[in-house]
Amino acid sequence: MNINFYIPLFYYYSILRRYNLTLSQMDEASLCHSIKSKKNPTMRCQGKATHGEFCARHRKSKILWASMNHKKRSIMTRTQHAALEKIYRWWVLHGRRRLRRIHGEATFLPEISQNDRDIYNLEPITNIQLKYHFSYIDPNKHLWTFDLRFLVQLLHYGGELKNPYSQELLTPLAIERLQTCTQRLIHHKIPVMYTDTTTLTAEQSWNQKVLDVFLKMNSLGYGVNLVWFEAMNLRQHHTFYTSLYNIWNTSLTLSNEQKESVIPQYNSGRAPLFRWTPVVIIGNNRELKWWRKNNLNLMNSFISRGKDRTLQSTGVLYVLMALVTCSRSVAEAFPWLS
Image (cartoon, rainbow, N blue to C red; front, side):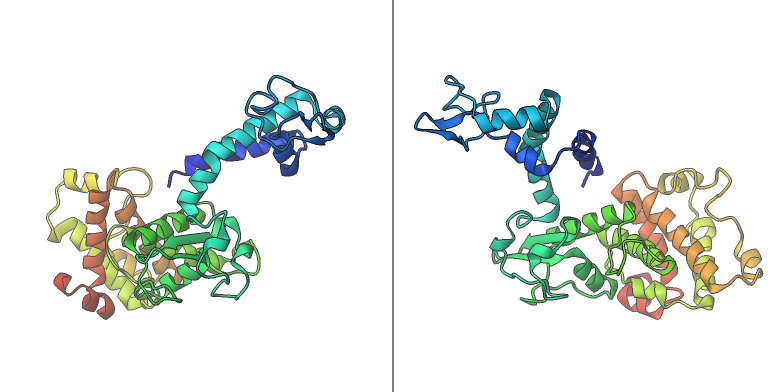
């Protein structure tokens, strides 16, 4: 999902804030400004204003509804009204359609979903915040709605991602969209795990960083489990760093051009990819917390800095080759790398 989609949306909402207008005013501004009919001069036409300020039926008569005329003078200026119309028309044509592509077909029609309750807290699915709304259609053409954080929690513990109601696996397309939505939220530092506040603690922020790296690896076609990384002890981190260092510098005999394609500018700037040889850094007696952060940053560089998915997948392969040397679980999941 291209995050640039949200830029015009935020821009139009900034217009609302600028003129101190509400969404109800925006809805009202989209209606025809004419009376309903000469027999009902006190009632406003409920048709959409498709011809300037009037609907197709009243575009010639143009008899202003008196109450509307009064509200225009007392509530909004012509500039404000034009801004509201611009927002509304953009939202109808583009906004709702794009949000459905991101969050699913039930985004604005939760009642068409097979389930009416959130599986995690049993509250109505209508209470799910838009940013966490996730709906998808299964192979049987059934529509399901979940809180994205619940599905992320399932991903957190690894294994196959199943619909808890039907026990059927989520489709590859649904999983890809889920990963894209999750990465977008993480990029904007929005919690993707259940929290009591909107401010992340240091531990929650760390968990999101780990989740982000493993989601990227999953999206590149490798079924990995972040528990493998979280379970690594100090000795295993030493082994991982040493193995990845050797893979990069000696065992695969990679040329500088090959290295540069996988990780652009890997050896330039103040922070090269490997700042220390294994002998030097292991002898410094660093704590486990430091090793986890350092190795996670290394993994992220290998899987993210390539210019296309093929190069990023190559980076994932190097990371997995190092992980199998220090983790039995990884070796069992990828025996062809052992």
